[in-house]
Image (cartoon, rainbow, N blue to C red):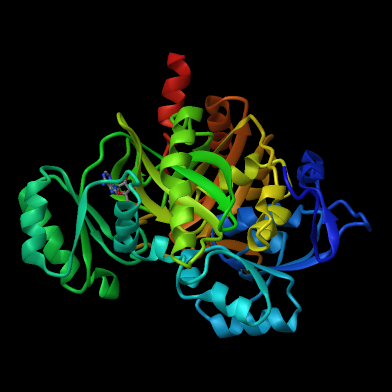
Amino acid sequence: MSGYPYYIAGWQINALKFIPALRQGRSIPDPARPTLNILLIGSGGREHALAWALSASSIVSKLYCAPGNAGIADVAESVPIAVTDLDGLVAFAKEKRIDFAVIGPEGPLVAGLWDRFEASGIKAFGPSEKAAQLEGSKGFVKSLCSANDIPTAAYKRFKEAAPAKVYAETLGLPVVIKADGLAAGKGVIIAETKADADRAIDYMFDGSFGAAGQEIVVEEFLEGEEASFFVLTDGEHVLPLAGAQDHKRAFDGDKGPNTGGMGAYSPAPVLTQTIIDQALARIVKPTIAAMAARGMPYMGVLYAGLMITKDGPKLIEYNCRFGDPECQVLMMRLKSDLAPALIACRDKVLDNIDLRWHDDVALTVVMAANGYPGDYKKGSVIEGLDEAAKLPGVQIFHAATAREGGKLIATGGRVLNVTAMGPTVSEARARAYAAVDLIRWPGGFCRRDIGWRAVAREIKD
Ligand code: AMP
Ligand code: GLY
């Protein structure tokens, strides 16, 4: 590795020294280490996992999270500022002399929070507003893929329904219709019939998606197995993280409506080293190079949603942030200190960082409020978490919780991520469900088959 060691806040950092022991406790006091004030932005399970990892960092002395949740409050100081309040977040960071801000969700990234922090002299992890278009505009990504020979589904962009319908017919069935902008995971319709495709196109243009639906992408349906692949990048160097698979559908057997993700596990058996090498060489690295060449270098974590087809990996979509709930399983498996790696992305010294991972499998089960992803009630009481969290290898990340009068209540759709490690996916899964079964929450539900593909592979092998 070149340029080793490097410096953060004037202190020498040697990422290889960040050791697994960190996981067993909070930061290891060491006067020779820098002590940083970190502000994490977000309130979901992803942010709880990031807060958990950052709070164990030996270079973090103070961790704030805005706005956080009841679980995050155990490892960080909650700050009641919404992720949409960019002015408030920047003012708080200045007031508290934040050394580094970590932006979890896509919303504030696409809205330019990274740029706002940097303009105020606060270093931040995440892509700039321009670079966040990799998630913020599906049309932008598709054009970038075409210009750089990046394998993805055949597609066209449309601003009107009639030509979109004609093109959809040429692609055969099923066919995929997408709103161009951010639509909280609901902007994709896979149409099985021509009538469904026409309806989906009309639906996208009828204003339901607001600005996100002013332009649509019509694309070929890719056959294969989906996987999530994550890399850190400083705009030039690329550091692959582990792979993961999630379950997007609400119900067992991958049935029911699409959700933000009902469970995940890492590693993803379908992401073999060959597939990872192909994804890096054909998809991720050309994207990073193209973004730099366009004068909008991409920094932060890049999440490539891949379809592993018979012709190799193809890009379904990019996200400009960690996956949720994929981040939860990645953080469980990460042995190294997260903080220097994130800072190295911003400081453009990622080639100095090497990350180590547990070989064990991590699996997370999302517990969601009854009715999710449709209408659901907020405010139901959750009990039994303490007993569940004591099971070996189990870590419970909160996704939408608050404490009210000594009780833990659900405040959103996806509420808890019951996560466990194990030497095999079957064992990790058994542990996670043993913990789920200790949680008393009549207002919630979960899938009972998270990891089924990987478990089936394990049994076959
Ligand atoms: P996206 O919001 O682009 O991730 O799409 C949501 C989900 O729709 C993906 O996770 C896939 O399961 C599915 N999907 C999107 N595009 C395609 C495609 N071209 N072929 C097959 N499935 C797709
Ligand atoms: N789990 C899917 C996502 O974070 O987009």
